[in-house]
Image (tube, rainbow, N blue to C red):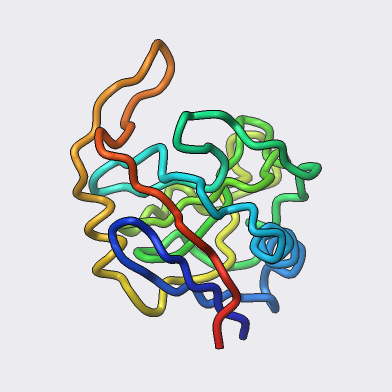
Length: 167
C-alpha cells in the first residue's frame, strides 16, 4: 500500500492509502501529492471531537484551482473511523476535488448508507498510521470565526509544509 507523509507546522503524520477499496480517490489524491499541490496549504477547518480539514486553501485563504471533481466511492465499505482520511465535498455527493479531512473520532453518520443525496456519505480512502499525536495536536488548536462564512478556523495557522509519497 502506498503511503503519504505530511510535514506540518505542528509535526508530521503518515497516511496509508487503500487503493483496493478507493482506487479513483487514491489516484486523484496521489496526483495532487505528486504535483506538490498540498505544499503551503493549511488546515482551515478544525472541530474538536470531529475532524481536521485541509488541502485546498493557502495561508491567505485563497482557494487553489483544482482538477475536475471525482466520483464518490463511499460505498466501498470503509468507515469514517478515528484517524481515517476521507474526501471533503459540497452537498453534491460527487464534488470532491483536493480537500480532505481526518476523522478524530468515529463518525459513523458520515458513512455511506444509500445512493441518495443524504445517504452517499464521505469516501474514506486511507488511515493515519504514524503521527496520530500530530493529528491530535492540530485538533486541539484554538479556533474562531473568519468573515461571514468561515467558522472553526485555527487562530494560529496550521500549514501543510509538504506532502510526499513515503516508503
